[in-house]
Image (cartoon, rainbow, N blue to C red):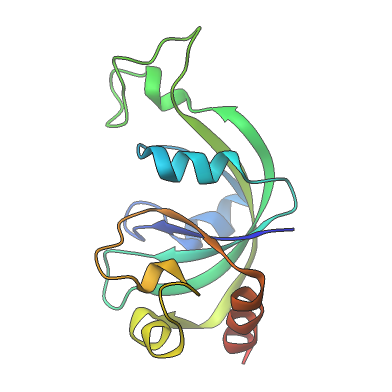
Length: 151
């Protein structure tokens, strides 16, 4: 099992949305490195749900990868902000995964606290200028995060 950190703006799609729906298609990834990380995911992997572009940003919940290797349907939808005119149905460019809600943590673990506890090699989200929406989390870091979050 691997661990991931996946970002979403709570105004667009937050942990409460995922809890209400139970599972979601994690689509709209339009960065090749983030896409490649998603391609590395396996069912059973766990992902920390990170609220970004909010004050304060931080980890709020936990998700489980339940399906991978899916074609992102938004790339073919001209009405979607994730439409990609270069993507063809016989040669899609973008993938997505299905994730299931596991839990909401009692308190947010803020980016400031993460920066105090981890260096960029341990947790990529603390690296200045990092904009990737999907990041791998080393096992030792994930175990420390779970201990901090479950307090």
